[in-house]
Structures are given as C-alpha cells and as structure tokens.
Length: 251
Image 1 (cartoon, rainbow, N blue to C red):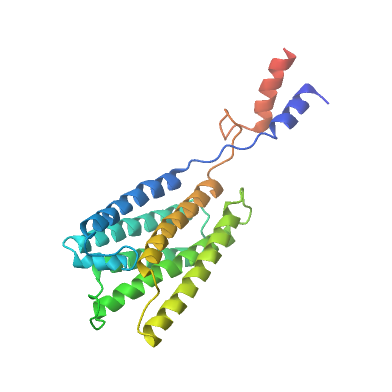
Image 2: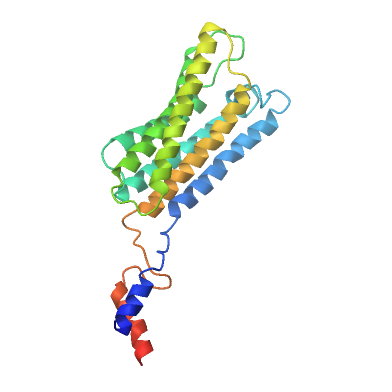
C-alpha cells in the first residue's frame, strides 16, 4: 500500500464537522425572547394567578397580561414560519404537509393571544372557544411536522431524524392522552386536570425543546451542509487533501 493510499484511508475515518447551526441559534434567540413576556406575565400576576393550578391564559385578566401573552405567541409564530422556510430551502421538507402543519401552528399561536379566555366561573364565549381550540391545535400539529420531516430524510447523516421521530411520537401520545383526560373531566365531571397550570407551563417548555430538536435536524441533515474533514473546506475533495499530506510525508 502506498503512503498516499494509507493516508487517505486514515483520514477518511475522521468524523465530519457538523454543519452551520444557524437554525438552532435562531430557536435559541426566539425561544429566549418568547420566554421574556411569559416571565413578565408571571411577575405581574404573581399575586393573582397560581402558576401550579391556574392556566397561563388567566394572565389576560391582569393589566398588561393579555399583551404579554400575545407577544409570546407572535414570537413563536414567527419562529415556526422561519423554520418552515429553512426546511424547504434546504430540501429536507417534501410536499405540503410540513408547511400546512407549521402554518397552522403559527396561526394557532397568534389566535391564542388575540382571543383571550373567559374569567373563571363564567359561561364559555366565542373568544374562549377559539383560545382553547387554538392552544390544543398548536400542540397537535407539531408532531405532524416532526414525523413528516423525518420521513422525507432518505439518507440520514446522524441520529437526529430518529430522535425527532421518537420525540414526535411521544409528544403526540402525551397530547392525545392529556386532551382525552382533560376534556372528559370538563364535560362529565365539571372540573379539570389537577395542577393544570403546572402541566401547561411544562408543555410550553416542551414545545420550545421540540422546536430546538427540529432546528438541529434541519442544520445537521441539510444537503447543503456538506460534511468536511476538520481544518479543510467542505468543497475540497478528500483525495486531494490526502495527497497534499502524503506529499509532505514523501518529501
């Protein structure tokens, strides 16, 4: 075996450098920004709303709380649309399903803030119905985005698509079980899930985490993010890199 062949074989084992994590950074910035109005709402309504028992939507009854909820929804809606553009531009998303699902997510997040719920103990109005249906829809469509994106990745470069599928399946099951239990209690027992407020807040964090996983999958699996050998451009052929190194060994 020649020195060049041996050097080529050795360097082909070098793990590829991950692609540009710009989508992950975007989720980080937008997610942190969306958390700011949520944290502000908790501070403003600390003496009125119980974060363990009461839903986030009750901050709409606190001065300025409704505007904070709407701001958080608008930020997450914009984030969903940005990720949609990137998954299609990268060539990972195929067909209308991911786009339709993510657009529904964005619309739902806006409607959650635009249509506040009713005060406790009052009959449900149109605004409250839109609010509740939109909140449920936002969680229901995210697993569809993850499953459809994973299915369109034919040759995965990492374990992220498999993780995305597992997370989407788990999220879908949890959302379905929660809705069945909660709606059953509301309609048949005139009550709701215990610690509903805490569960809703944990769900909000899970939503951000799922968007992080979606963004990481877009960054890592994008065909435009060519793998590269550490320290060398991605568009330089591996055999040329190896030959240049081998030439130094021979010389």
